Image (cartoon, rainbow, N blue to C red; front, side):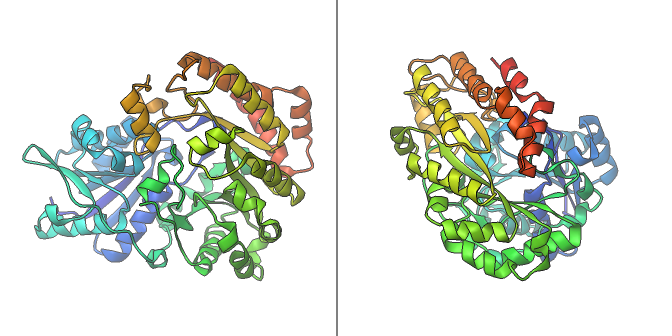
Length: 476
């Protein structure tokens, strides 16, 4: 079948209850769609967001029937593996000749397993997808050998073929803006209620790819070749301005795993300080605690250009655990960082991990106390999860630590492994206690609900309304 029409599908899925009610745009699909649209202007492209359409599986099947695409493409994280597989299975049910393509970190990490478990997948794009998908479409339409395309996994004559990895794009500025114009009817539905309120328009942009650190539990750095590649700061500022002025984006999540304040903080300040959009936007950044702690002047400047929220991976109070994670930070960095963010009226968001092999009831209780001592505005506690593609996954698999192989539960809210002294259920109980300690205090909740900080008021009211503590209790 020649590729004349591509349908990008964001399939029906259950979103992470920890973050409350939210609806993110399918940014990865929009990035790929924009690149194909520019490089192959003769290809018709549709993006279907089943979440925004409130569409179930039956609705997806009917849509594919009416749309009649030549290719269906989807992508997702590990916890969404089965949703992606079901979406392409439905496409094959509608028409066995539809070419089905999946991508993303999970499928890139375990392509062999995925092609065996999900025969409805025709092609897996491993790693960076733009060049590979365009080359695949051209080869299918021109009858050229698929085996010559780098970064591809597929079945051929009952054998699974993995072509060599594709080199990474050197200059990310060559990429077009994500194709939000293809989902203009959906844009009004995207929101992050817990973070910015139900009526604040929420959009996502990518300023960099990868990370040059080597955290053992992280999927990102290995997927992107252990490199950090940034768009130019001018391009990032232009994209921020574009999303705000063209589509009314206000709460903008810069998805870079490591913002690198020391490198880009001053440059972004200089790019945005004279732009009108800085008065309207609310930037959400992700940064390392050591990067924040060492750059107090730049943190202040980021607040002046609309940075309202910074998330940091604190992970643990124990220096030994931070070394085990290959984190490269100190727990003292967390104290400095949280105070620095508070002093600059930036909402402080700390991430913690429990469930390492040497974790005990006592060590997790110490982590809970640590989370209170550093005083973040918002804490998320996660269970150490052996995601395929991580160093920790290989270690856990070899040692037989993994108790749960249902990828749906790989959401960091479900305990997947025991520790040396705690059962998996006990780890789950400890995770609930972390949330109970941080959010279960009436005094703390009342202070949050009536905080002078608008984001803090929104968050604590939303946490209460979504009954997050009760949901964690049900997982035990």
